[in-house]
Length: 575
Image (cartoon, rainbow, N blue to C red; front, side, top):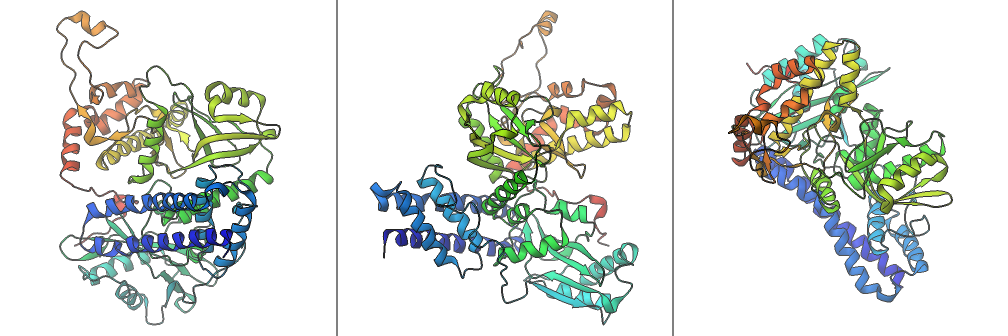
């Protein structure tokens, strides 16, 4: 066996071990749900994310010891790629195997010589459609009526604990169908229900995912299942609006644990019911976030080849830690750490990187945007104006290299582009649209509270650090001051001994590095009287030390709060 073939075999062996460990963690999701072991749910979610990085690094280190002086032999890696292609040709997860190879190659080659000759910039089997041989979904007809079909559907869900009240759950679903889906069920003979065999587990919920299919159209649906923590499960609601189903698979949520043996087959099914979701998002949604990153990059390159607009600084107030630019025709922003921070920021570059890694591992509870981290990302030079180049080199020269035809960014993150909350609120105020202001402020407060329930304190809570999605949800996206809630020391501002002290530029009391004074959050609403009134009506408790200390107590007690990806008004009654 040649050295190139040994490299290929070693990488594939590591990949196979990774897939086995990944599957083992995923397979435990049902037991954790049935036991209502919510602490374990959170712990294993982070463990599964860390698994990829750890195993890739171990494989790269082993290869470096084996290759030694041939480490950067270009021809060796070209041959290793060809040998690897032969090994993965028959695999039904070949795309994941290619991405794993890329990850190890980049570690060994220090993210240089990134081209299709040595790694998989493009898939070696693009367009190949893989079938598992066994349909990934059950199909139900309505020949014996909707009630009978629902009974069979719930019986087929593989739980080892009983339904709390199956007849009530079916009655709730039937009521929803009568009120909302009469068109889809008006011709039972032509209606089919496809349900993914795998249950999707995340946080405190289990989700049955499927579609209603007729001769002319199809409709997505999700049945969220909850554990009553007394030995039984129940259907919490039925979600059928495409936008609502999309939110369940949102980029602001933790990754699902689901038994997806043939990932591409799962993605095809999900795209049939959520055509607006990108392939990258769907891979990421079930934990294959590195594959999501690879799919994003390929899609982005294709988009560049089919568009001609120029990159620009992203709308909004410029950040003190990150510089952010975007391409108007593409729904992402690109974030680069500045070389020098504002004097008010007492953090280092390494700390910022750690904060973004924390968010990747942590439960985002629908309130923090997922990010993708890249090294040596190349952009076409002709899509950058001279003004943008000058701005990037002025604030982040160490990360930006301008060549004849390429702008190389040594380190960046991508993130979903959203309308900054301060811009959204100002536009609503200008239009005198008080409902839009009310909704935005209410969402802002709920965002902060739900993050706190997940043991996250946002730190810098100015409106400019939050965005509003196309679904109207407020999401936090500036992570340089983020910290665990339990690390904060919430204090009341001491009374001034002398009136003159309150007029001083500096506080008259000592302030520790983790001290937080909730009273100071009043400054968030000084921008407008309407904003201040609405905030005080809805979220006055955020200004009180008691609220924050109570949240800390709940987190420290191990209480995992209910934060579900749908509105409370959609939940079924359990009487």
